[in-house]
Length: 177
Image: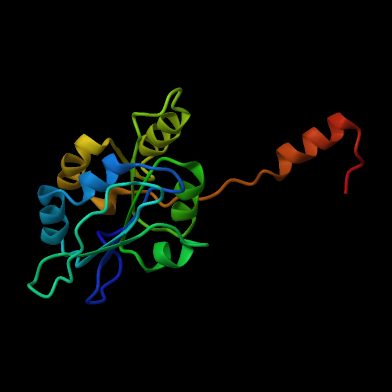
């Protein structure tokens, strides 16, 4: 995947925190150094889905040549936002991760370290090891952005669960189709 595959004038970074609160991610993504790095890489717009968070980042229209910043709390579907994005920065929820990967979008997953028994961390780190995405923490997001090379990411191909389902069906005594 190339850095921000869309060649349009508008290059959107879409950030999603899901349905919970993840103010540490919102704060990190609107920090000056992260916004500067995104702008340096040619991104023009930053759209944040901030969930139940209490921190409201400052909006910016970008008319002065800076990164335009906007946000909203919830949407019935984020698929259109992901589809229009050149880069997605997401919390580590499996739904958001796999929806983004299935759409073939470059992805940085930011793990919420405040969650106890964080299985999401294991998923993100495994997918990073397989080179499907980059994994960061709120305090390492800038560092991840500066070292990322989106062309090195490997497109995710969903597996076929049919053989496993057939084995389970047979075990449970269901007839083969």
